[in-house]
Length: 539
Image 1 (cartoon, rainbow, N blue to C red):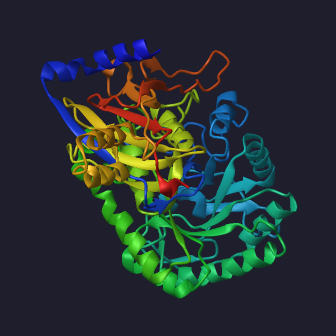
Image 2 (image 1 turned 180 degrees about the horizontal axis):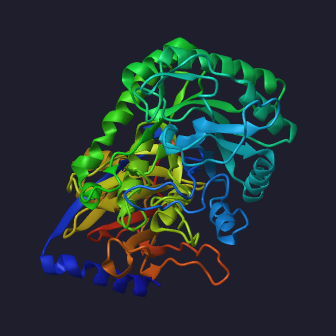
Image 3 (image 1 turned 45 degrees about the vertical axis):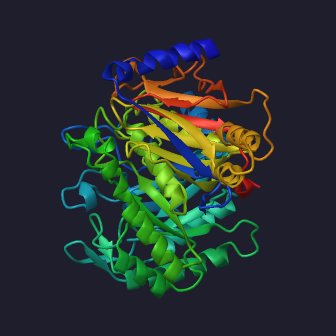
């Protein structure tokens, strides 16, 4: 395997060799301090409400992937979720604030979504029948999914002007739905209130003081319904785009302990029809802009709502169903993994990808249910990157991006390295900041001790260095045939394809001598696992 992998790296490096652009440098990880901490189930995916006739840019990429009609018996779907061994699924999206629940004393007609010219987002209200809710919950239980459900936050309100809605939220239908859910023993990890109603909203918006008042009401309902329960769901809000003034007012109005999670949405690549999507994805300056939102939200939570935590409740990169022939291809993983890394550094506990299936940005193909490249990127993150975030530094190039976490479920550290350059082959020495400090302190003692310190610095084994041949694990991700818009991801030279029985393929690493430098080919991604890395922050 090591011989084969060596050949793979050589072939992958040929473009860089011909371009004569090879860069040497160091990546230094500080394992002494926790930068941030994510939830154990950081990676999340959404199932949306959009019907098959939701179209953008003369395309209708949703097919039959709605909460209402997704084929839950498709074997690929269950296996894709089960591979995560607890995937968080958020049920929600633009139409959730038009969903009625066919239960209890509902007085409104309960019909399917229909195209309607004057309706919100061009659709009428829709109906979730309890038979379908039963089917969904059986599926969630069978696949081990954790469920976040987005409630209708417009029920009972009326439009005041343009997109502004006013009046108190009518909680009766949601309350009957929650009662039914509890009576059936269905496990809901969290209830989310509303979708994209913050600030000026998308389609509709509600003032923050009214929203906060309604959240106080919802908190009382949850506390009462789940009184005595060992597992009371969290309350998540507002599920909208970040607006500092609105978010601050919401926290102030709702008050201490009402909201558990501040959820926000991010589509930092712009419209799915933008012809510059690929160049944005590969532009480090553009990717860095997302840090502004992450940083500001972190600040207001610390100042105004330290009892809450931050989630990205929905993010698909490009909005309006994503970009055709971009969002479902290899190149999108540069954006996706970079944003997972950036979000985790800014204390984001959960990151929900729009979507699990549906639109151009689905982790699974909307008609075949076959995984797209980002599915494997998310799965590798979920399996390898633990919840403790570490500081990592590299000054090699802005096109080389790196993130480090304590490894998941075992000792050591996992490094994610992303090469956005189309011509630079980075050859990096991985270093432990502990050993760098030791080496600096020991340089003046003797030549022998300096040599030993240098060995420790390079071998990543901490203060207990040895000359044994220690190995690290490497997962190198490239597109099939070098085509950035390929829908097939290649892991260590092997295309990732479902097995003949529809199972997710094994994601096997190659093992490399820990003393050797790391080679990151142009336009590639790598997870590097260091099982012997000394990191006190990892426990």
